[in-house]
Image 1 (cartoon, rainbow over the protein chains, first blue to last red):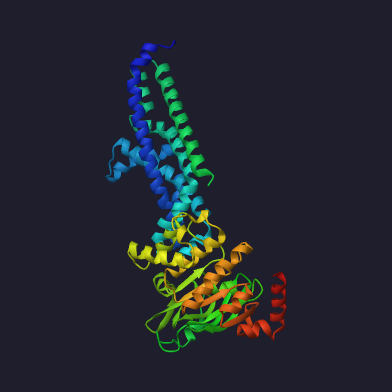
Image 2 (tube, chains in turn brown, green):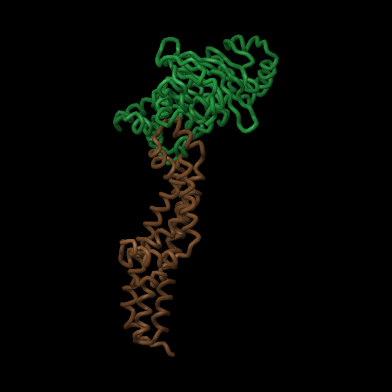
Length: 217
Length: 275
């Protein structure tokens, strides 16, 4: 099989449309992971020991099951309970839920790093618990872990082809469709690889700048 | 939650009744693991009184302040502040362990300055001082800022309002911390070795601020300090602690000039030799 530039050019628009879906799903999933991970991390510090333990095991469970299984579960099992979501929404939720288990651990490390004196000063000032989190602890904790959190964005991006399995029209899905129709897989798969490299390298570059800005403070 | 038999037996003073103002420790016991830090401690501090706690490290002085700030819980006994227990609240005619809402109420009269300042590094100096007045006392932003600027002037840092704590010297940070505590208008100000973390040349500035506050307000002060000159200047009474108990107490003149207890004498010799 020889590389056909003309064919490669003709399928590029399709693949780029796929890339847009991939990036969309990654960014939306990442937003879910950042939000949900924060909720887990804060609940683990709940004054109620039961809440803390339950959340701990939920997070442990999410982390110990493969993303693909979770995606299948959300896509095929949830509709049985009457909740039917589009493939993309399911994919975004699946990615977000899965990675929230990781981001919650990152937040947790950042929170643990905030000196106990900060909590004590907040108590001495009688600040309400919400304010202690929002005004004192989280701004300090999150700042320190921004580079680590950003790493998970790239990891998630590279996991996004799994959404193929639940028919999200992301990039690999487009490439596979093109290949199946033309029976040429060399060009679409190569282009997918190259596009992944380009986006990943660009993101790593941005990430290093983030690290430079927030890492050594 | 530790059971506190003596709390159940204690006669409950009426809220706000005469003679109950100030702080009273009633048979207070505090342990960390097997280590008994305070053993059956009894003492009181009248409203407006300035009391200095001295004694070797590990003698329980800091623990007393931390218990008063509700950063620690007593294992036994009761601490009363203006007639209210810090560990238990009344429900019907029974005493039950204090909940967060109750604690927030009793804490509102108490402020604390820490050895390590503990300013919020993510906020400007001004916001450090306005944060609690706005979010706890419900002051408007303008009122809080006005109050904060007055206090920053009092501690001599008007020009640092917009700086971040990281840009200040230790002495300046500690003076901001004092302003931050005072912004809540506490009746009681706890000072936990506030100059111990400072370079020697910065100590005087902080102590001068505290002297001014002692002279110009009637705030109750409990100081843990190794600055004996300061203790002599501001306190009405000095308590000498050793192994979780008071071994001697009296006016600063008496304690510093003619201590009776051997352990007080040894301690003062050791401290004064360092200076």
